[in-house]
Image (cartoon, rainbow, N blue to C red; front, side):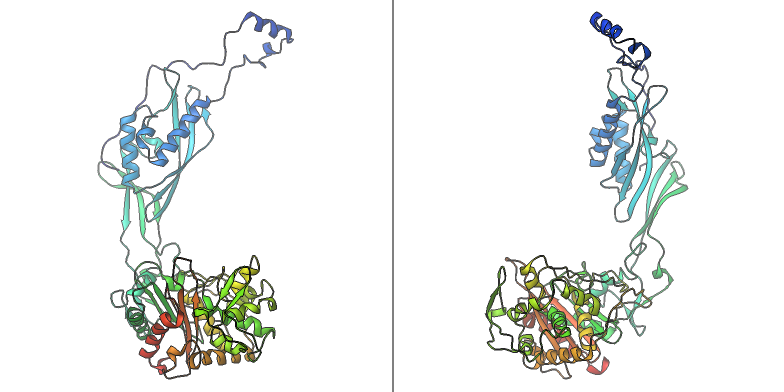
Length: 544
């Protein structure tokens, strides 16, 4: 609030409160007598109304509604001192950066002097900090013309607001924590732009990881703080010194350069993590500021999800890599599904269907899985859909039970309502090639509430063979000239009729799994492929 001294205003010359007694006709008196004297006992329509006038409560609720909606002139006009009320309400909400208050009226109560009091709860959202909640009361007084008005006083805004005390908002400037990589090398937002939104939310992004501030009650004359009414945020690990992460400065630099060089200015994200323990080596986003697509994005994973679908089919011996599963151009299941670029592979084996990413072949196997089986496998073996504690806010995936056959067909190829992001798909890849899920981590000591079952060795061996063949003979040939036993899977995911498909690629080499998505990249091999290739080419295999 500003430093004006607002004075409480009351009105004089109050007209006596009207009772419910009304003049009656002679006929009405006759009726009363005929009723056997019940009215005389105070039980009839001549009994005095001892409850608050409904008009008073209506005026109180209208005042609160106007205040909450920012209609301050209208709210002030419902008081006994409109000019002062408008100035105070404006300086209170504006000075404390309050927007869209929620003001909830309680039941009205009548005082002995005929005034009416309406208690209310105030929930005041303070921009960028949180919500200040308190209780106050509206006094209402009947006017000479029979109407009701809010009897203006400073204390109705807040019980402690007065001629001598006001409120002051203080914001504490907070900086992202100092961050180091796994070897203690400092990581700065200037050198690694993608880490800006990540570093600001280290520790889980819960209470205390954002801005801090307080609302103080202060003396109007001296500015001395009398008491603190509300605090926002809390001291966290960032105040105890640098935060050591699992990141690797070399991998992070390579990831950022790969996105900058090969994403063609499109929105894109990438995650690289260690297969044997889930520790995250690199998190990169473009654009580098704002939303953290890599950890918190929600995307259909497209054909990279065929790692999970294949696992589900192989686990129950519903198919083997050598089984013939025809791959036509089209397959209709409620809607027409097709392969990328309308490819077809008559007489293809399941192994070939995987390496060429044949949508129609995978969809044709849908009846070999129960409706909820794909989600069960994702959760049980890959940890998808369980709650992950990564060390920063993350989205941990969703595989709902399909609503119908069309949605079940779509889920077989990572479409429909299946949702993931690069963090999830890098972890899926790591689990597929090792057999064991490890909760991904960006910092040390995170809680782990996940529970999974290892994939059988035979399934892991089959998945690794098909991933390798996808690089040497399939849709991930963009990586084929790189050294090392690289395995990969491409993916293309539909977005909408008026947007190009998102492009995906997941890969593994040595002890590292990588996942990349490029929004509107059209194809995985053509968009995400060059990004992953740039990353793996820049980091020597022996650094894994």
